[in-house]
Length: 373
Ligand code: COA
Image (spheres, rainbow, N blue to C red):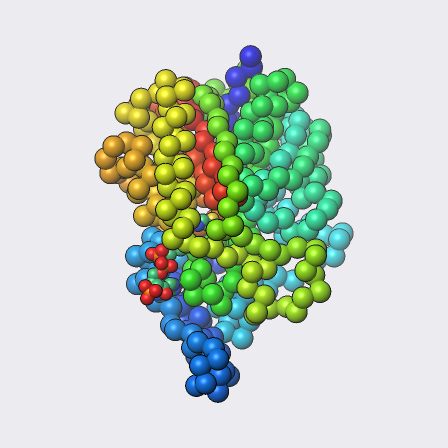
């Protein structure tokens, strides 16, 4: 069988960063205004007053200190509380495709790969900007790739599901070079007026080039094994869709944006992922001690601490389980790929690591890799 490898990765980071302080200041200003507007109902007990968010809570509960966003001004404007990203005419490249192309070009350049040699483009992300044509087809066109392209959405697990899909094409011989991109404009589906979650997400784009070993550059990552799992849960959900398009816009539309039962997610997903990693280690005959690093999904620092300690049987060091949460926040499918992209250059040939994602669905994916050369 043909061995699939990761030839290169790419990362595009938006220029604007929003600190917890800035985000909390705008949320608190918005909530004060909301309370003033609803003073009579609060007084009568019909509605509850909004309480302030806090920088200390956010950092302690999540490990997040700041996040990058496509549009900063709208997100921190108490009058708006959402990104203001102007609509573009159809003749212009769409925002989501544009950021994916930037990350993709980096990956192609790093591998010395001509776009013409790409057989397939997969756009694997949480929220596509539109229904169709597929974002991936627009990205394929902008890059000048041949072959075929399609979108896939498995929420925060989209990248590992995309890597396995790409690897399966390579294994079967139906493609030799597959470009998988994860453009995430999470600020577009985050409710900045929800104190429980307004701090969680950021925007970014990543790219992963999955290829057959025989055409890959000497410095690549052998894919040792991939495993995917899904299990239905309503604990992370976003009901936005065509069937509710006539509903009034904005605040009061809370479940048409990201909502979650954070505590339940934490409790249910940690054991599911730790068990899955353990079973995959066994199936691939890899000892936990052989794992030089785990590039885990970046949703919550405490969650990652718990998962990595269940896998290793002790607390993982920052080197063994690096975080990008502090500066990027949760970037959905892109998180584990950012961690891999930024923290993998120091690997020597033969060293092994794990890319792992988990999120809504529930969904979880593992990709065990080994550095070649
Ligand atoms: N500022 C200050 N206080 C806040 C707050 C904020 N922004 N948000 C919530 N709180 C308060 C709550 O009201 C609650 O107060 P109470 O104890 O008086 O009721 C307290 O802080 C604890 O809230 P809770 O939501 O239970 O916090 P938590 O410790 O569970 O942390 C998450 C919240 C979301 C960070 C955490 O549950 C988590 O990360 N879960 C997993 C999420 C995940 O991975 N999701 C996948 C997304 S893809």
